[in-house]
View 1 (tube, helix red, strand yellow):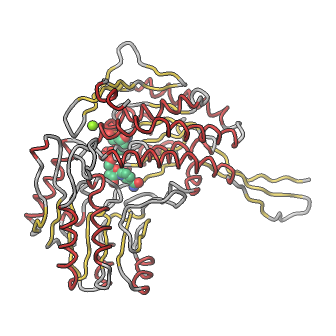
View 2 (view 1 turned 60 degrees about the vertical axis):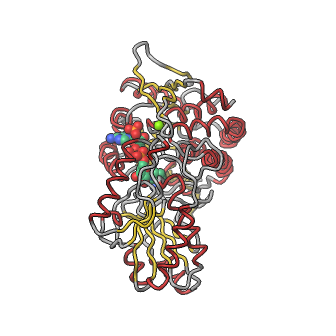
View 3 (view 1 turned 45 degrees about the vertical axis):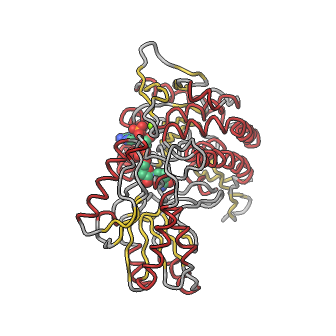
Length: 486
Ligand code: NAP
Ligand code: MG
């Protein structure tokens, strides 16, 4: 199966109203493998008319789908979980070929898709309403959750299918229909994901796939009056634009955005555990995670000892093509991302930082590889301590106290994930309270979400909505209050 994929040129079409579609003069865009530069395949670029058609069909399908009893809707998701398990090798390999993450991570991500389908199927049974004591005799008052209609899911390339599954499965179980626009970088992975949903036999129009650029496809969805919800994960910049466009038709808009996540290490911490957590959260997925650790904020007395451990672990990581066994760090997703990383490292040096590990492109490997990089002498106001890099670059910042560490932690525009390593009950609890951050980890790295736990960020990392848990229904449903006089 696997060798078949590597020699087959893949082609993705649009999926509208239960059919794979392409117009006679359909244009296509190409998908490249960042590890080798090879062409993986091509994918249809939807026109505005095709996006509008997808929304129309989704809206028609919603009218039927919302009336299907929830246990029946759940049965579709449970069947999807089974079929994703059967297709996981194929899906994972295409993900690795399109965006470069190592195969074990891609397989883990398909595991998240399966768990999300199962979790949301179960949550369907718990879409409870409320009853309220009535203020008058012979009356009852109840509140129910209702679906909203068409949900536009717009997703990034770094988790090609897991983030889509959070959005799509919570939308579907609640009774909404979906039009999904994946990132162009991973459009073929999206195609395989939707092939599985097609095989599940969902009613036509309940899920639709429209590939193509954010500017045309994304924007059309954001402006369409029949789209009721935009569920977006991606950069803060694009999220802001979507919020602006969507507010014209008063859409509900859920934004999961960037981060500038830190690991705080206090002088009483277990430094081996801290180093392990730091390296895993900084360099897994080549640092291209919204929850990646890009800052270490360490108390001065333990800085040298911690840094040596972090360097040793980092330099033992194997860089290469994620399809090969034993590789821990794959390439960056594309040339742009490589240049972004190179520029940030250059700026860091100009501002006074010192490279203590990495700092170079890995030219001999051919693809868009960059060494996992550690930079010390970074001050909290430096560019690499403030801006999201989305690459394998870790800034080391020294501080003199817990209080200073927390001030530095909170001193960026973002608020997604904060980690603290300490043996102190006092400081661990203060950090849990004082970090302005949607996720707080005590004695764990910054990047480790569990199913059923609300996921999302504060400040410019989001707009207050949460996913991965039942809190997703605050986005995917709205309340109706019903008064009955008897
Ligand atoms: P991005 O550039 O914001 O793109 C995200 C999605 O939006 C893609 O599907 C993109 O399509 C689309 N898009 C781009 N411009 C658009 C526009 N003007 N209107 C409508 N849609 C548009 O982000 P990315 O580079 O793919 O992903 C990296 C970012 O995602 C990072 O900032 C990272 O922190 C964030 N992220 C956040 C989370 C979280 O949960 N908080 C998780 C993962 C990633 P095309 O690319 O096809 O044009
Ligand atoms: Mg690619």
